[in-house]
Picture 1 (cartoon, rainbow, N blue to C red):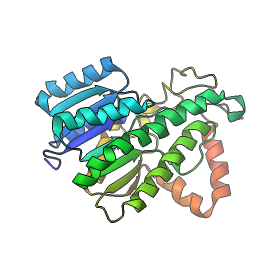
Picture 2: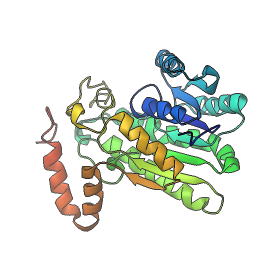
Picture 3: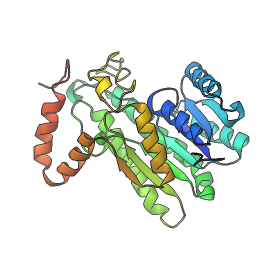
Picture 4: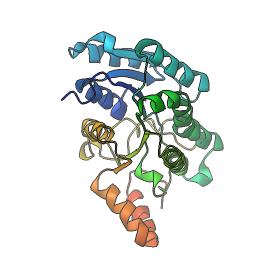
Length: 274
């Protein structure tokens, strides 16, 4: 299917996981794809992989981007316009996680989470918005079930995802009559490297995942659901059975969900929860 033929799609955090899988999926459906990530080396590898899949190299652009830096985000948008002349879809996917009790957490870790997850979304959206309004396109934010319900031992992660939800939800209302589509996309637990790179209390990466990655939704399946949601111009998508159950049950029985969630998360290996 070429549902995104000649469309221009920017994806942040595009060097691995959901971001890279989404780049493949959008490209397979005809889009011109702009890949943004902090690591220039990983971006180069992603660019080569896309080209080696038989796609024309001129359909892709790799822009090293640290989303915590406003100038980098501005440059990402300018580079996209210089090459393709328009923007149809912005997928704010760049993000990091953490695992530690707030009482043990260095505040610099929480700030880093907000800088990457929240401010990265704000910066990219700010500079892309005039072009998205012109194309009546879509701005998407990849959040988490932790953006609907606080996740114990992930205060910084949950706070940043709640913030993204509030930002995008408000943006949708502001442009209700402008043709802009705003998508809040919550994957739930998805197999990716986000848990390997998750920060500990002192800001160092934990280096291993506390969950069984093989039993989670794959990044490829998640990417297909994302591209489908963008195509259908959906405003909100919650994935995985446990994710949907958590969000819906919390509306009526929040105290029960508190207890269930605590007991579920404390089963993780080396969980800081007792």
